[in-house]
Image (tube, rainbow, N blue to C red; front, side, top):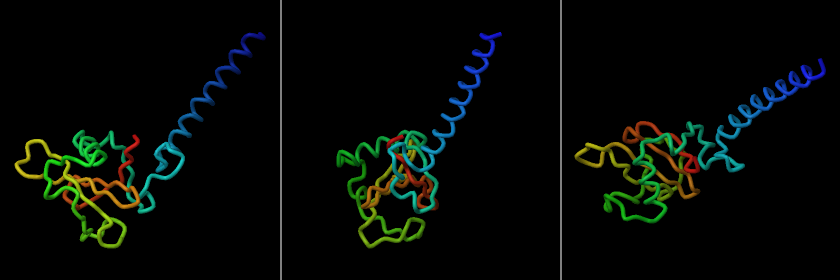
Length: 139
C-alpha cells in the first residue's frame, strides 16, 4: 500500500512538471525570444515568427547581414526601406534597411525580403511588402 501511494505521488508530480514546462515554454515563446526580454519590434503588434520557421533562404540572408555581405543584389541590398505601405512602425528616414531573400526559381529578386531596423528589429515579408512578421533570429 505504501509503495502504491509513492508511485501515485510521483506520477502526479511528473504530470505537474510536464504541464508546468509547457506553460513556461509558451510564455517564453510569446515574444521573449528565450532571451529574458521581448524580441525587438514585438511592441508593433505584428506576429513573431522564429527564423527557423521561415524559408531557409531567409537564414542565409540573415547570415549575410551579420557578416556585411557580399549580397546577391548589391545595388538593392542594404538600401533604405521607406515603409511606404506603413505596415511597420513609423520611424525617421533611413531607419530601416532591406535585403533580398532569394526565391528559388525566380528570374528576378522575387517578393521576399528581410527588413532591419536601427534598434535591432528584424522583419520578414514573403509577399513584397503586403504583410510583415517580426523575426526572432535566436530561434
